[in-house]
Length: 72
Image 1 (spheres, helix red, strand yellow):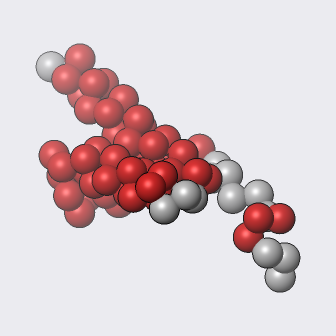
Image 2 (tube, one colour):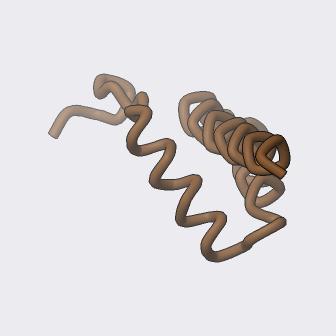
């Protein structure tokens, strides 16, 4: 298996949405905050790819929250 730096770790939109669903199911209202925590943790650790992935998950959760509120 090639080193991590040689592999493309960019998640697909389906993977991002799946992770958003899991976080919402486990953490409810706090799901976006949990994703942002992981994004910050990985950014501080120097893992930009994982940080960007978790940021995408947080954005997905926020977009879903906005859509739900707009439907009310």
